[in-house]
Image (cartoon, rainbow, N blue to C red; front, top):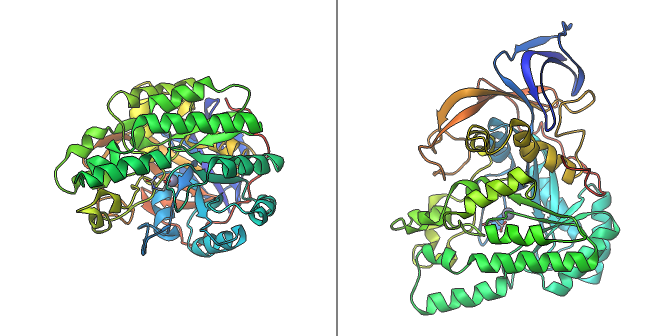
Length: 460
Ligand code: URP
Ligand code: ZN
């Protein structure tokens, strides 16, 4: 199958130019000012941008939480991702206490196989680091799972102490793998939560009040210190605050990479003031921050101190959220976002001139590909790269709404918000999976991608 995309404006992290793109099978075969096939199918991209498929490096599909799970599984979640212009996700496989990493890997492969509509990789969240598990980290890297996650939050379940984090950093560095860090001080948060509940404070607002900015700043600083001592690179996930960003800027002698998410760029903690359960929609960790932090994060993205925008997509329905009606600690943490990332960042980043068009492609696709061992197979438009492409209409405007989205969740963080910049057509390894903004792919098309290990390629 040969597909020709004509008259589009190609945008990569480094270049913007008019060209045609010829796809042969799953790969890009030629890029030139004018190509005339032969092709089985021609797509006219006049007036459109042709972007490398988005890479969402932080998702939680089918994540077990208490006696239920995040609302999107690998089928619904990856279909929503494709509709939003994302062609690869990296989901967090999670080792629960008492499990081996191999068991967690098998569990996540079973969740994804036959269901994913786009390509997927896994990070491995390590929550129980015995000597045997340390040795197993090397084997997981050899399987193409080349990044790990450690939690400094959630004591008693997911959190690792500083000793275990140091060991994880050393072991990962020895096999050139990267450690992703959820940086919040879990023990101090637990004290604040206990005090709030003892004082009778049960509303969603207290989720934010018990997870203050200072405890992200402290944890980011501590994670960097551990990385510096261990001479191991780290990647801070879902950075939410100016204070955490300031710590990253102070790092010396070790590569400290960072990701933020649309919700931390666009929303503030004022949303927790809404009455009743409304505030529960925004209960996520870290929480939304006071006005002011959002501008700092945009500046961090523009300057390159923050390299990636991912989603931390971890959706729960309003019924799930209502479990915390009388106790904010029972509200499942997480929010939907896998479908809206590209349009939101284009609209709020490029159209406002906070980000150049090339920087937009960088933070949504090229940088996560480079950092997580997918480049240049993914994350760019080049001969030989996977034909993961998005044809994007920069002028069309839509209104975001739960009634229109495809995420399996009955609310949107951005209900009623207009965004200009809309995904029209998406190709995943050469196959059209979205056409006229409708899903035309199939569950099971997505393949597990083995990622390379090694120092992240130079970032632009
Ligand atoms: O609130 C969040 N972020 N839920 C997902 C799990 C995590 O902490 O990343
Ligand atoms: Zn997460």
